[in-house]
Length: 314
Image: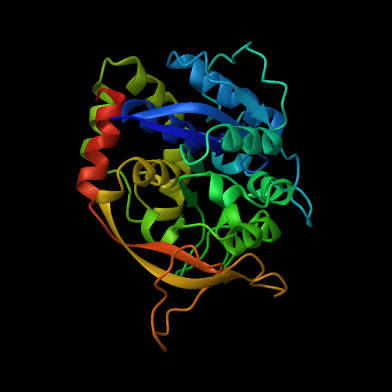
């Protein structure tokens, strides 16, 4: 089975891994839209084209989008993803040109042209989605599912003490997404940090002759260096691939609904997803209620890793 996916990304290393995961597990990419985040948006756009072309998806259009957040300065994360955003691995850049339509307008156009058919997967800051919602308030009625890699509900952040990077990079846009009346799955650090690749999985990628695995092995060397410093072991965390996985195979996890909002004003907490975990009163029952999000309760990590390796031919 295939799923028609509209992917909004900021292609650094884990975005590239998400693209690879989807291509090997039934995602049919209708288009990719690109935002600022891991790297500046022109470089993220070029990287998206590069990864797609490297795995033969040369017909997938890529649309450049927001160059900065809505209400704060641009910050990027080359220290995590390398100066070229792809681990400084010397991967030859695509020479294909991006599509002409700007990202937010293309999200709206595609949703209008295929109402109820598209799964929207967002693995970068949410600026393009926020702008699309401002352009078309009916957008929540027009997409089938929304899966966002973002947030850190009840756990520490990675961009700040409390803020996860994708939300922290544009909190105002994230609030627009949470306020919209659609069913949003937030795949946050509370679950993605459980996806560290074990040594045997890394060995399978290293030893595989499949071009997808060889590309991945080149991509992740810088990522492994970064996580070795953070976690004290040579591994990496599959943040964006998990969001793609749950968009394609929701049965890999169990979920719960929580009321949530984005902290916009705190000097040290700006960009935090504040989920109401107190258990007071009845739990939310309608996932499309504004301010209600779906979060992951439990994950079949072994099955997720198996599907990740399968996508790479490892």
